[in-house]
Every structure is written in structure tokens, then in C-alpha cells.
Length: 111
Length: 114
Image 1 (tube, rainbow over the protein chains, first blue to last red):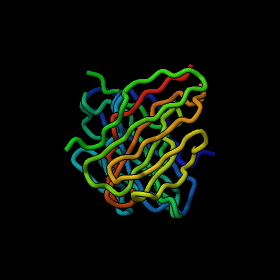
Image 2 (image 1 turned 90 degrees about the vertical axis):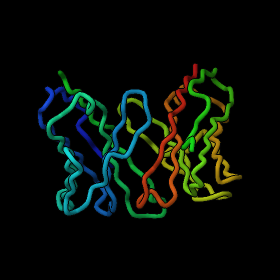
Image 3 (image 1 turned 30 degrees about the horizontal axis):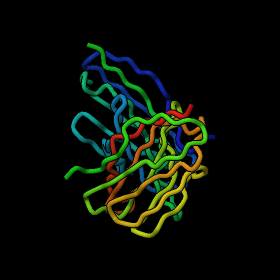
Image 4 (image 1 turned 30 degrees about the vertical axis):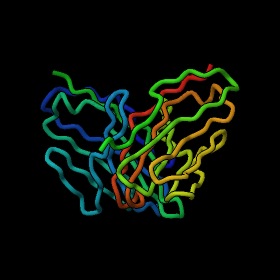
């Protein structure tokens, strides 16, 4: 089983739609959680951190459910510019404390 | 600041050839890492460094060497290229441990091994 799993999609939604992605992680000792965005043939960039209490950044809302070991990302009022691959990222405890990436969920927002 | 730079952008190698992928950052970051990205696999950590002179292995280190003689540079060496090393390689850096600080990624190197 992969340490971080995501539905690869693709998700094709019309402009203005609300779309949600889920991500599950297998290591219960995981400590930090992030969503990164990756445009086609570009490098990943941090979208937002995910906090236990949930957090919002404009049209984006991230939630963490430690009991069920999943993270979610909700995008409201989708824009064409939101089209990208969204990567779920987890950091587990231990000496490495490095990022473990999910394989990504591809989103296309259609006009 | 140029941020994180990588060279070359594209490279084609024959099986058995060696080469070095360059990574440099001008942000005085202590932490630097190399990842590879394959279709459907996400990014996987190859090697990382917590400061000049200190390196360690990540999830998929076989076939790769690194060194960190300066804070700015973190080259990745392919000793004897194999088709399984065909991938996109990203270098990343941050001030602090990745758990507490944003990782900045370079633009990537697309490597094909024939």
C-alpha cells in the first residue's frame, strides 16, 4: 500500500463549480500535511498547509481528519486557472522528516 | 534572487553513460533535496542534505550519488545511466526542515536514458 494515496482523476468540472479532492495516508505518526499544486510540465508549488482545525485561503479549504487518516481540499467557484495537478504531501515523524508525495489528482476546469 | 536553478533542462543519455545534474540556490537555504517524478508515482526522494558537508539517502538512492561542498550547490550524479532512470528530476530547498518551511522547487531536468 502506498503511504499517500489520491484519486488520480481526471476531474473535469465547469467554471464556477465546487470540487473536492481526498487523500489518505497510512502512517498514523504523520505530523504535517500540505497541498501542492503542479502545472503541466512545471515544478510543484505550495498551495497551502493543512491544520487539524481546518483552514481556508480564499476559495480553497483544507481539512484534516486524523482519526480516519485523510486530508481533503475543497475548491469553490472554480476558475480556468485552477486547472492543474494537486499533490497531497505528508511528513512523517522520524529522522528524515522529508516530504512524501501522493501521485496527484488532475483537475481541468472547462469554460 | 534566481531561486532554485537546475541545469540542464533536458538531457538524453545512452545506457552506461554518466552525468551530473546541477542544482543551485541563492537563498542561503540549509536544506536541499533531490526528487524524481515518474508518471503515476508522485515525487520520490533520492537524496537530501541538511547542510554543507552532510548528505543522506532518501527513498530511492540506488544509482545516484550526491555531495554538498557548499551551501549553494547540490549536484546529483548518475554513475551509470539505466533506462529505469528516465524521469523528471526536481531539486528543492528550504531554510528549515521541510516540516516547518515551504519547499522551493527548481524547474526540473527531463532525463531520457536510451
